[in-house]
Amino acid sequence: MFSFFKKKFFSSTTPAPEAVAPDAPLPAESPSPAAPALPTASAPATPAASPAALPDAAPAAPVPAAVTTAAASPAAPAVVVAVPAQAVQTAPASPPPSWGTGSLIGSALVAPIEIPEPPATPPERQKWLDKLKAGLGKTASSISGVFVGTQIDEALYEDLEGALLMADAGVSATEHLTAALRRKVKATGVTHPTALKNILIAELTELLQPLQKSLVIGEHTPTVVMVAGVNGAGKTTSIGKLTKHLADSNASVLLAAADTFRAAAREQLTVWADRNTVEIVSQEGGDPAAVSYDAVTAGKARGKDVVLVDTAGRLPTQLHLMEELKKIKRVIAKADGTAPHEVLLVIDGNTGQNAVQQVKAFDDALGLTGLIVTKLDGTAKGGVLAAIARERPIPVYFIGVGEKLDELETFNAREFAQALLA
Image 1 (cartoon, rainbow, N blue to C red):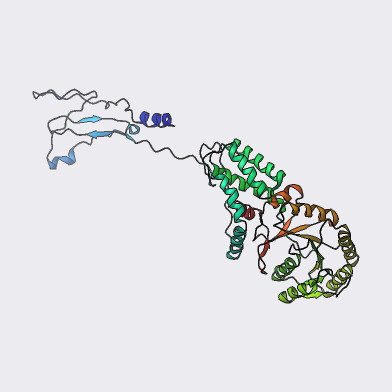
Image 2: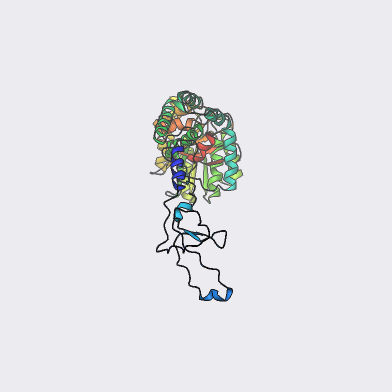
């Protein structure tokens, strides 16, 4: 770098050979002492003229790109020194390299790192994002602590692997992310850990992108959504929140209380129906499959947009209960040959790698079309979504961060990656 600037500035200040004024006549000899010899030709001094004679004086021939210096004494001859313009100009400062407009942190960049700026977030969404960041704050602090050093070395990669595994990212996702980081560092030449963190956010966003999908309502009337989950995952509460979300989108919803095993499950769903001012189909002590059939039939007759079927919570290891779920799905298909149109699984964000096993078991039994991840406002580590993306990439329609009706929001891969690595 020093040799570049040395060449740039020192070469530009070296004076070029002085040009001689063309066809300049020699001055007449004078008895006065001769002026000191100069390396350039001298033009004769013009006698001082009176102010009246100035208009008749012949104009001097212009000298392009020259600097004219007059002698201090009137008697001394004027000296015209032609100096190239580029010899007296100050060399401009070297402009910084154009590396794009993305966020660049680090040194010795071989290639630019473009990090697109996200669009402006609405205030309501930003409020919810703040809750998500607070819920994942412990995990974010643990992972971000890896990038506080001053260099990227093997110890950093080892610490990052440990932090991702502790965040429930799983072995497959951890290996995938660290391998991608190594490739990007080699390709771009980044040397600062903060730049590596930016790359990790981009790689995690890309990994989670297949999970970002919207729940489509309206292709079928009604759209029948069957909701399953293990005990205590927040299934019935999520149905209440989903009802609010759909009602806000001007969709008419009918609830089906097909969880006839758990005590007060029907009463709990009735409370959510009252809060959202929607209709509900329920039977005290009825068969879950029969309740589901009646709800789908009623939804078709009443012209409802959506029928949400709440099923009983069960563990995937309880094979007889999993068979009951398969029966409910078959009976729903008898009421509507194309139903159920969506089969959602509600998973607790606090269960870590167990959530991956639940997704696999319920998907094998029912053929899942989407997930709802709950309780990310507590002790949830959040990295389990990376594991799901690697092992069973089923779309995540919604994530929840609290008990209130408005605390269920659509999943966005980049927002989640930033919250997890903030």
